[in-house]
Every structure is written in structure tokens, then in C-alpha cells.
Amino acid sequence: MHCLDPGCVGACMIGALQKREHGIVTWDANRCIGCRYCQVACPFEIPKFEWDSRAPLIIKCELCNHRLKEGKEPGCTEVCPREAVVFGKYEDLLADAKQRLQDHPGRYVDKIYGQHDGGGTQCLYLSHVPFEDLGLPVLGETSHAELNRKVQHGVYQGFIAPAALYVLLGGMMLRNRRARKNEEGGGES
Image 1 (tube, rainbow, N blue to C red):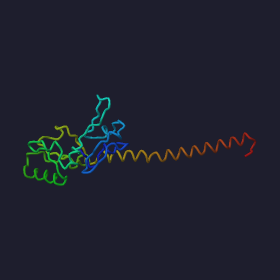
Image 2: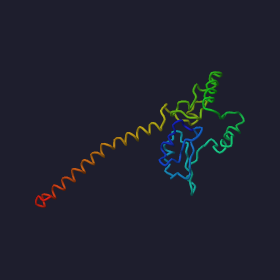
Image 3: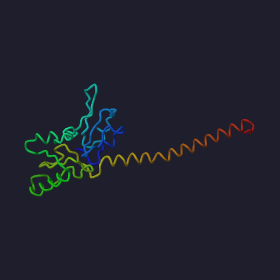
């Protein structure tokens, strides 16, 4: 889905998933440790792990990144005979989707899926059936990556107080040990 704020990228602690040029989310096999956090963090269930392979990979669409470097478009858009899958600049695709909804009321569900869903994606959908019937999740306008950051930052900020308490208690224990040692040694320092 190449989210505007991808949860998979936010979950990857090693940086194996990156948001690259043109907003494409790519995976680097050389950096991946196989934790599969990206798979869990994606609300669209896009990254897939090859369970049956001895050298498993994370599989996901990279919009034929290799073809884009050659000045070509993704293979799916090139071979689609009905032009149901199109490629272009986000602003142009969004304007086209809005125009289609306006020109053909009743042909499509009155929504552009991906415009706001899950914080927004760079893959936009129009459909004549409800998006849930296509297997797309019902999401709010907040990205999962933003929600993950709030939880993680809240947890880490919450560790400040216990860590400070731990240091304080450690200091008190050290002081008490020294005091006890001094008492046992006859008050000598």
C-alpha cells in the first residue's frame, strides 16, 4: 500500500524496510533479521514471510522499483488491459479518482480508499462494492505508525520514573552498606 506513514517501516528496528524515492516502501534482505515485526505492524497484512523456505524472505510489492529506475512503469499497470490499475503522481491520481466519482455517481462506493484510511496510502482504490468485501480493513484516519510511536514513547517515557527510583534506591543501599560497615568496624572511616 506504500503508506504515507508506514507502520512496517516504523516497526523495523534494523531499518530493513525503508520509505524511498517516490514513497515506495522497500525491503533490504541484507539488513533483515527475520523478526517479522513488519508483518504484525502492517494493518493491511502486506509484508509476507516465506515460511517454507530455508532462506526466507519478506515478500511485498515494491512497485517494480527496478523498472522505475529504468524509466518504465510498474508491470501491473503496463499489462492491465482495462487500465483498472494506473500509475502516476499521487496528486494526479487523487484528482482522477475524485473526477471519476463526480462523473459517475452510483458507479462506485462514494469513497476513495487510501486517501485517509490508516493515515493515507499512496495506493488509492475505487470500487463498486464495499471495500471490506475486497478484504481491505476498516481503519481510522490515524496511521498505525503514529499509534505505535505514541505507545512506545509513552512506555519509554514511563521508564524514566522507575529508572530514577532504581538509582535512588541503589544509592540508599550503598549508603546503608557503608554505614553498616562503619558501625561494624568500630566507627572508623
